Image 1 (cartoon, rainbow, N blue to C red):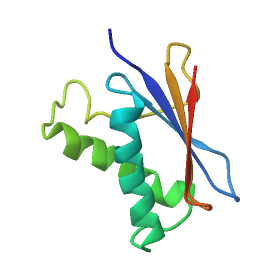
Image 2 (image 1 turned 120 degrees about the vertical axis):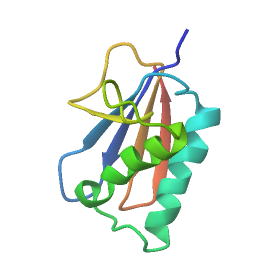
Image 3 (image 1 turned 30 degrees about the vertical axis):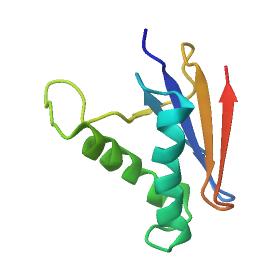
Length: 105
């Protein structure tokens, strides 16, 4: 069974940006993945703004998959409109405070 999760990217200025991952959503995989994203923000490579930095999660998900399937998905991370009903974990990434919160659903 796939371990699904949502990623909610927040900052102090705007509405959250939501992403979905269909499999490998467990903390052992997601915490290192999301900490790489936060490190890029901390180091100034990406701006601490949800709208301006969140798209990089999709690129990171593509790089993780190392393949492109134009008739299906770009990679492991996809945008979504909000929290899905079938997730095991919710990850809240605060790009303003450089924090990661893990919530078991």
